[in-house]
Image (cartoon, rainbow, N blue to C red):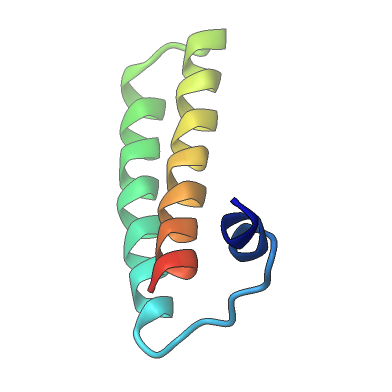
Length: 68
C-alpha cells in the first residue's frame, strides 16, 4: 500500500505522447458535455452529469499519468 500512496501523491511530469492523450480525452469529453447541455434541461441531474464527466476526465488522466 505504501508504494501506491507514494505513486498517487507524487507529481508525474508528462512523458512524451501523454499530453496528446490528455487532449484527446478532454476533446471527447467536451463533445459529450455539449451534447448533455443540448439535450438535457437545466437541473440538478444535468449538473451532476457534467460534474461526473469532469471526474471521468480527471481519473482517465490520472490513469495515464500514474501508470505509464
